[in-house]
Image 1: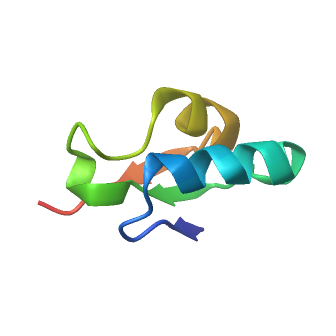
Image 2 (image 1 turned 90 degrees about the vertical axis):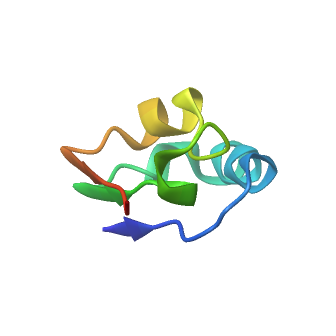
Length: 56
């Protein structure tokens, strides 16, 4: 599981640069409740979760 909390897109980019090959998870908690400021498409693609969860 990866719980992103309120991670910003800048930090997602850093994680992609640092750990792209180690980011695969089964469950991803989408940042910022799934809003437009939440997890970026490149980050979600790299993490490639089987399931995503967002808070309402």
